[in-house]
Length: 208
Length: 208
Image (cartoon, rainbow over all chains, first blue to last red; front, top):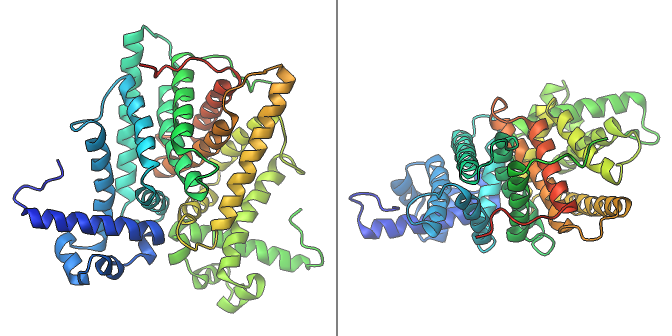
């Protein structure tokens, strides 16, 4: 899936080396302080060499994010994101995998935070990503409700946004203190809580 | 609460003007691209004038974050953060208030994302803030369980981290598309879901 048609194997290897170095640098310094010179240095290339492969810093930034998404998909399904209840299991599995790759998580946290600033190069990427994932989660809820004969679920749009939100937010707390926050288990608990409240709506414990 | 002992009223007014301008600038550009010169320009002062009031850019950044926290606390309780079930209502109310102040939310999102980078000036602030808030939520759960005779709650530490996480993550999606994400209602739904799963643990819908 990751292969570009016509690209030589050595080129693909080189591109992946650069992507890994860029993930490290953007993750540890952000996209403003993290420079192409530092990324070049990590892989023993020149600044111009990086530009030869990626064209611009912005393009490299976007490819770091896409690279992560592709790695996710390939790791778990080899073909596509699953639907129905398997989508929620897949999201829990993503958190389990993320707990083993702090560098990629850090790059994602920093870049998603930056992405809400004016004219940020990854603004459209994140807006599109969240919208697409919310739709996929809504569809998964619809499928599960059909399969399980649930005719009156809770607010699936709130649930879809909340599931993505809790995954993102736990990453921030985990990066700050991995001894206090269990990324995988807290994500599992929260996704199960939100799925349960959606499939089996109950009275609020917060009512006066 | 916000008053500094001994500071003259004009000084306090000036400081608050600077804090509001800094919130705008850090929110729209991040703390690296956002400069003291631009903040000074917004309030009709010099760069040196800003430093006279805040000492350094780092100090100003931290006071922007503290200013937000104080505003929250003052707005809802005038004295202290409530405990027990009222804490969860307070967190929902915070999201309702945040939906009316995108500038402050944006500054918070950008700075919390940046805060996981190496040697970021707000790193300790956020680590401490998350740890403190998690403890307060755990205590609130303990109090609610005692009051309601719940002897076998779900994992309150996962719940505490998840509630803060979902609040943070929804802010990011809401800033990207306020027409698609209802910050207040999605936050209410998610907090109710997590509180319910904690007070009334049930079988997982994700079990194979």
